[in-house]
Length: 181
Image (cartoon, rainbow, N blue to C red):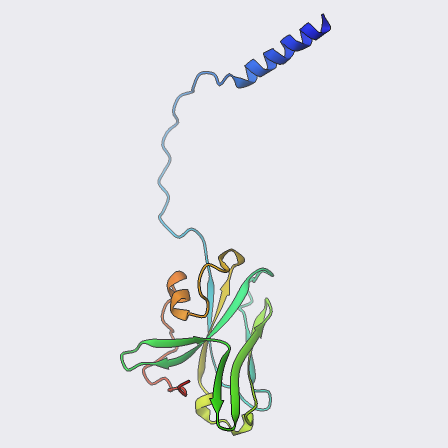
C-alpha cells in the first residue's frame, strides 16, 4: 500500500512539473538599443622614440588606466616606411638586418604593464647611424586571449583590418626610409 502511495506521488509530481499552463499576455515592446560594436576586441597604443646608448632600449609603459590581463598577448610593430602615396609599411618585431660586419635585431619583451623594445646583435651598436636608431614609431597591440590564434599577427595589415585600426597619427610623408631587408 505504501508503494502505491509513493507511485501516485511520483506520478503527480511529474505531471505537475511538466504542465506549462496558459500563456500570459504579451508585454509592451521595449525601446530599440543603439547599434554598436559587440565590445572591445583589441587595444592599440602608439609611441615615438629613439634608441640611445648605452642600453639601446626603451620602456613603453601602458597607460595607467589600462589593465592588461595575464592571459592577454602583446604585439609590437614598427612603422618601417611610408611610401610616396602615403601608404604605411609596418613590420612586426622581431626584425633582423644583416650587414657585412654582423647582424642587428629589433626585438621586445613584455609584461602586463609595459613593453621593453631593444636592439641586439653582433654589430657594434655604438656605430649605428641615425637611420637605424632614431625616430621610430611603434604600435603596441594588446590582444585579448579569446582572439589568440584567429589571425596572422605577423601581418600588420591583417591585424589592422581585423581590429579596425586607424592609420598612424604620428607618421608623415617625410618619415625616414629604413634600410631594405
